[in-house]
Length: 74
Image (cartoon, rainbow, N blue to C red; front, side, top):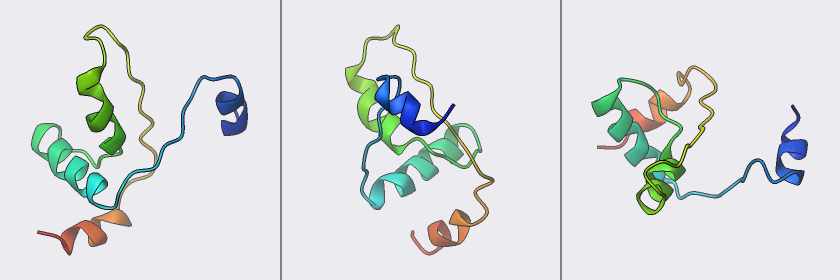
């Protein structure tokens, strides 16, 4: 499915996040799941959603490019 179709039909939402949010998400997911994260926005919105709300998050890529950027931050 093309991203434009998903957006046009209201099935997805594209958002902006700060540079710090992916780093926080990376640390969070590594502590819990040992995975490279793509969940900064999920962490932001999840507390305000109903407990039975289903969130689908796409995690694409291996993360090997981003790991060097993360390594530079404490």
